[in-house]
Amino acid sequence: MARSPSLFARLGRNVLALSAVSLLTDVASEMTYPLLPVFLATVLGASATSVGVIEGAAESTAALLKLASGWWSDRAPRRKPLVVLGYGIASAIRPLIGLAQSVSQVLAIRVTDRVGKGLRSSPRDALIADSVDPAIRGRAFGFHRAADHAGAVIGPLLAFAILRWSRLDLRTVFLLTAIPGALAVVVLLFGVREAPRALPEASRPLDMKTPLGRRFWAYLGVLLLFTLGNSTDAFLLLRANQLGVAPSLIPILWAMLHVVKSASSTPGGALSDRLGRRPLIVAGWLLYSAVYFAFGRAAATWHAWALFAVYGLYFGLTEGVEKALVADLVPADRRGVAFGWYNLAIGLAALPASLLFGALWDRWGSAAAFDAGALLALAAALGMAVVAPRRRLMS
Image 1: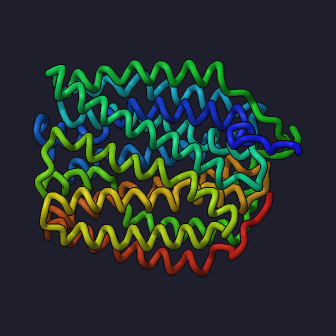
Image 2: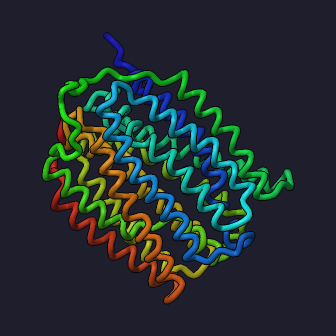
């Protein structure tokens, strides 16, 4: 009897290599991210609103470039150069946080870092969709997210080990992120190949208004609503610290979150291949709403640990599935620009979401901010139940 190919064989070289690149990149970025709010607040004296401005501006910058890079990758014969450029910029600029002396310098570094993310994300996601059979598209995106989150486990643990046992400071941790960042670029250069795809005719006009379908735009509208309540996770880390989690344990808390994310992402994506995308996304958004509501009422240190663990399941249910749904809803030759619009919708809401959350926190306390996020997520889940197709589409 012939043996069926293994999971790794079915996913193929590109998905595996891009997953390794994301793992290494997240080792670098997550050595920085969970410590950045503490660094801003304790070393540079930033307020909650300032944290929101930095993260919101960074994500909004990335979102605008994700649309442009996705559109261009559909027109260009190769997607890989944009992916390489994006990862290269981020890997070079990220360690410079270790040299920053002001909030404005951190803002400039974070925005430049997100420029790299903006250049790479949509072409990378389109390359993944180009490289796999539609029947395992959810699993492929879930596997990629699992690898990404595995890196986000390793990164905080490395940061914790460096801070705890080497007696180096936060700035040195940030500078050391240059090592995994450089390794990620090497794997990308030598491990990823262009996937065969049908290119548009050279005579076809450059038109960013090519129809993508009503269902796609309705999906983005609901996603935009959800994202308005999905502020930066830096606020969750601040809330954990407020509940008594020591700064030295913040990387461990962050690593635990990503253990749950990584463990649940591939099963979540695979389940969406069987049941459809809508049930997974709706369930994930409802879970997000419940977690945010609970964060506003948490009163003990162990509450922070428990809620972070449950929060990780939301990502497993939705991250890869949302991207698979984008690929389901649009023609193959429009995937790059579709992922660009998807990322733009998320990024455009990132700045107002973080500004709103920070302002509510500063004026009325953390409970009001978390309640607002929970209500928006609940409304979006109801909208998703209406606009998403019941069955998985094949394209």
